Image 1 (tube, helix red, strand yellow):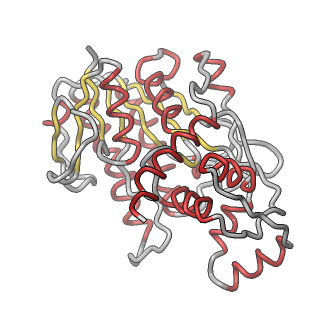
Image 2 (image 1 turned 180 degrees about the horizontal axis):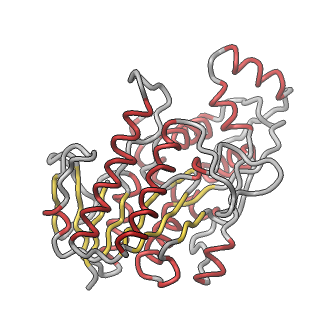
Length: 322
């Protein structure tokens, strides 16, 4: 039985991944920054690690561990309040990751799987989907901290022999999702008329079950060592298509009407919501050929099913409370 240390084990991805790995027969040691957390599964052990930075002591958590899956991170924040966001992101995402990798190598951990972000590649695609060979263009402090962490990990792997595998997902969705996707579910549920029919973009998404599947592959596959992988559901859709699919799964009306996108772009800029508009209207596609070719991996859950599972959770949890 492989023993896996899972950081960020009580987050959105961590809850799903911990349950998935436990069902697959792995022994999961969960870490958390707080002691008062609940899990949707039963970890073999829970270790409180406190603040994650260059001084975190992981040694207790790493005892007997063969594989580390590092999810814990300071995530992208829409309304940043700190004076220097890069310092804050770097402290946890880059320096904290480096500390974990150093101590993992010291105790003989075989492999570390790092969940990065497609934002390392950039914010949008124009002529072709992102690939692992594209130049990294991290555009904000969060993405830069993730890119720095990736570079630190690859350097550590070269120096110590610790096997490193990196995954860069786009927008992750599934039961329990938060942030922008949760807001989109709310819009679809309300059935409000939305002036978004004129948007002609393509977006890659990844359902949580598909992400868990590729992470598991990367914990043990020989060809995953020293590699970066992009992941998606393998089916790209436009924002209007996504809203229609969510509304249909909810059995709600979808009222999209055309409006000049140039006017919407200008209005969003004047209102200080340019980032929101860019995420709604821009394209961001990823090419998952590398994982397919190296592993023979295919996303096990189709986009339609992943969205239906998410809608079912949303209706059970959110609509029931309204």
